[in-house]
Amino acid sequence: MGSAIQTRSVRLFRNGRSQAIRIPREFALPGNEATISRDRKGRLIVEAMRTPSMVELLHSWEPLSDEDAMPPIDKLTVEPFDL
Image (cartoon, rainbow, N blue to C red; front, top):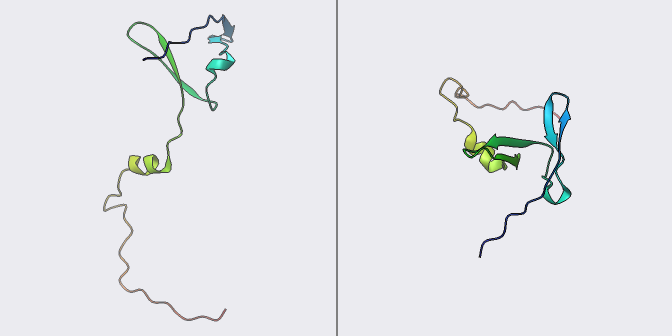
């Protein structure tokens, strides 16, 4: 059984040169950034920006090229020193 879509009427207003709406508490988004897009039917879609997990971030990085890789260390020597 699917859940019903919540709907609420809101007022549009001007904020400088932009049009804005107040988002009611029950529709509040987490964080302080969102993305907005328009679908083919002209509806606006507002989605909270999601912070990627560390694993997602690591998977998004390109591997280092041979030029960017650290040069090989031919001889690892440690010289003794007094603490």
